[in-house]
Image 1 (cartoon, rainbow, N blue to C red):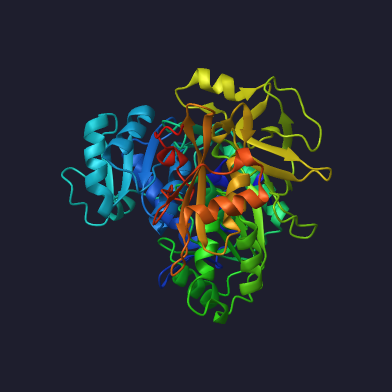
Image 2 (cartoon, rainbow, N blue to C red):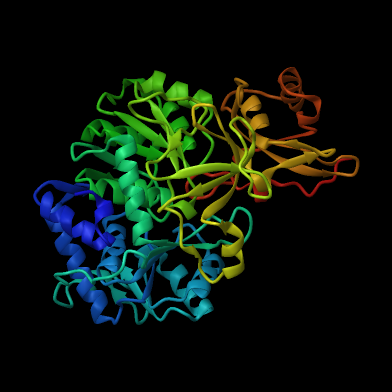
Length: 511
């Protein structure tokens, strides 16, 4: 039975345990749990959470690096009918305190190494009272994770809740300001999982290697819920290492891996990368950031497996489109809409634009969020007549494939003419010396804004600003050519590898 026919994540988990009980569900290190064992652990933790008074209407924050404890907590929260709030494990005290202050909550589960940050954030926010620590629980008054699991009778049956109940509140990365909490219901997540299953033909025979952070919507849906509800074996790595990822794919004969372009580029740079046996891979799924053509084609040449690029914001649970597995794959596009999902390209007045014209990407379907937490006005501006205004700019071609042009807020206006940073980035990325590039706007007295490029040069290579400018002049209109080129050792990125352009935008004024 498909995940979308159940009313909650917990119910889908129970059915998975009943159907695939003795099959391997989750591997972490040398430990593997079957579906039935995983269900028993989830039920045990749910019983402990219930003992703390966490149930329907409760919110529980979770700040744990990739580990079985993350999976158990995410599912146990659903079991008791509460809402999970994933908190990125790389955030500082003030950033965590902001989320806790905004969302409130009844408890917070954290990894042992993150307990000091979580404790300080809880004191600053003064909204969450109970701290649950994986490990030895060294913080005063903290509850131990293992002890909590063993402290009560397992919750044998999940709480009965409506499909429209909030399952998760996932905060956006905040690249355009303060993070916003997208409220995703059980229906949102379950229908997105089912649409992904259909679009990329996932079956119980698939083996996943998971390196994406599970606190992110891409990781949670595609690398945790999708394999769990489809009966797959999921090999969970604590974080991304290009070498360890290649080794895990080879060792476990993995067939599916989700990631971001930076990860796949780094995998190709591993010494003797092509010597690893990745013949088991059916494909890898790329999302979260623009996929350069060089990475897409180079990965397939090196490892013999295609990269299937997809697209979707957190507010859409998050997957909106993906290149088909069995149909035509268009390199440079992010594919066709998922089953049940509609895409419209609109102008500023929300009027639909014809194929080939550039406008804002709007999305409609059962995967679209219920709204933003504590932000009614922003919700009204973002959800218009059933459509999610993504803030991304793109176009649909004559075959219905979606092409991303850029973020609307990243648009650079040079002398009144629009410049889309991605076009300039793609041009510079074709230079043999360039490892990474990000393009932003810099203020100009004369033109309002001009193009500024931040470039990371490949190890051992040499490159000058003039070479970058000359290359762009050969391929771009004059107003698109960077007026400023800065070289850096690395680009500031979010936890999943998305470039934080707000941190790159220059305050320098160019005349």
